[in-house]
Image (cartoon, rainbow over all chains, first blue to last red; front, side, top):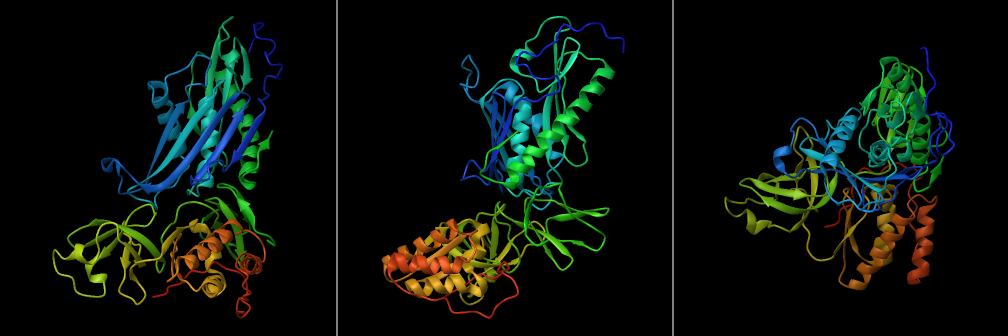
Length: 241
Length: 245
């Protein structure tokens, strides 16, 4: 690719282009829940709680063939600089839905017909990449809840700042406007088979660049998965990386 | 494997064609892969994952303590904290019950101790026909983590017997994590509750029985030794619940 000079030469927080923000993960933070986890990437923080498999209400949602997964994503009112209205929003519903689809790839609820596994993700502090942080936390919480799963998932948001690809975008980068502007690509990969469970794209990108972005996400997800595994093997302990 | 390790879904537990995948595992070519979170256990050639957390999943033969949440034409619906309610058929109770008399025998909110006799298909069928099962009256219910029930029961019921001896209570442990304790005196019930809570807090400590003996001696000034049971090959999950009429 004949590259013209990209306008984005250095990351605002001094990271390398493929470097992740400092991660911390902890499993078992909500004792009353069946499974829970907190995942932090830089200033973004996600808390996931899993309850179930349990009896499903409303009854019309029941599936007699297998259990269903219900994902709720919400940002707390103080998670961003401007207060946001707490509760469900159109954006929250959409993120909940796509995250639900991603997790449906790995959970195996054939043994629990007519029941539901509730995954509740709350964002106490947001600095871009909340849906991927939510997915990372949710995967750990689901595992801790003892839900049968084929494998784990890890997610990362890859970005394109003008023409530079970067891993784990933060809010300042997301708002980058020079040149081609910023493109945000949240990618969720399964841990064993490395399949794509979620791929979204906000902006514009060429096909070779997208391929490069996905291979970058693969490397980042491997690192995140390592931390998730460590956190699950030592429940109650905060793992940093 | 000398020591049981925590495994995460998708993780390879062990490699080799000679191993057999058990509960919570699957085979992927040469690898035995974990399908759930828990402790990997290798006995002989069988690899399985012992759950560490999660909701109670009923199995045939389990003893459960639950609440009546529904009355239908031919039986009762029992909530016992599982992913779906259990069904207790009128034919599975000790005496004949006519149409319209169901609520006289067991009403909403009543607590029953029942046996799971089938988990086929989409139903969990319960029975109270056998001795020792039926409506639970008096005493107290203690909620414990269902994954810690084997610790409360102990080897061949040794732990339950220890608590019974120490407090003089009648105890029924439901596999779903509900423990019933009953005694003439409420002090005894509270003492039993204290001991059970102690067991759950220290469930991962080695030599738990000894710890509990010391705890009883310190708290209640009673010296009680658990009757030695024949040394079992290994501390395994006790499948049966302890039932006292």
